[in-house]
Length: 240
Image (cartoon, rainbow, N blue to C red; front, side, top):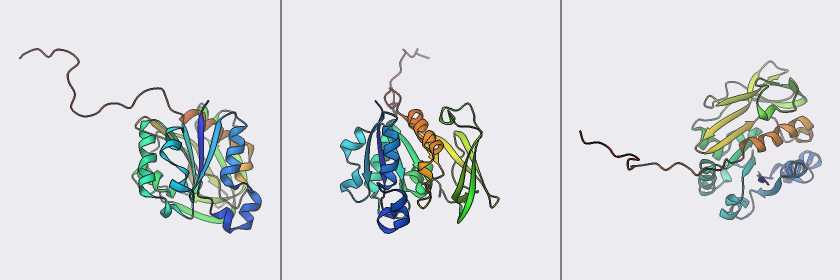
């Protein structure tokens, strides 16, 4: 069974009654609920726990880490970020949601600023499937339409994705690469754009389906990380 840890800084839920009304169990709780319904083994972790809930034991027993953050990226300890990065390079899957684009771990793995345009104006969002054969798009129609969402617009300062699955259009006219897969070491990373805290986005069944599909896609493969450095020859090298 795939073991999933859903990480959330869990700050908006404590500060904003609009968010706590939409997500009474927190954003992490809402995501954990629909992933558990898919028969994944799911745990949650939050910023204010010891080691942000991401102890060595937790990370070693996580196949896929789901990450949501916004207000407190700077509070995430660098040593925890380094441990998460090593687990990704070893093969752990990472799903970064919405404002997690500015998280330390995503920026570290991308090597860029990960900056973008944004606007909170109740834009309608249409998330177009641009790779209909991709497993993460399984069960999704031509697009997902969200009545209200925060706008993210290009240019999105990320490396060119290894796989681009979704592109968003917003009512104000902007577009955005909203579903991107990146490969780092043995691991796969999926960035998925929607999920502003004051909208019920994670209650949308199609958004839930994408995240369920993404867990299955980024989970680890059964192989060890390659060995690097000086190497002995596999065959006898003839004398010249």
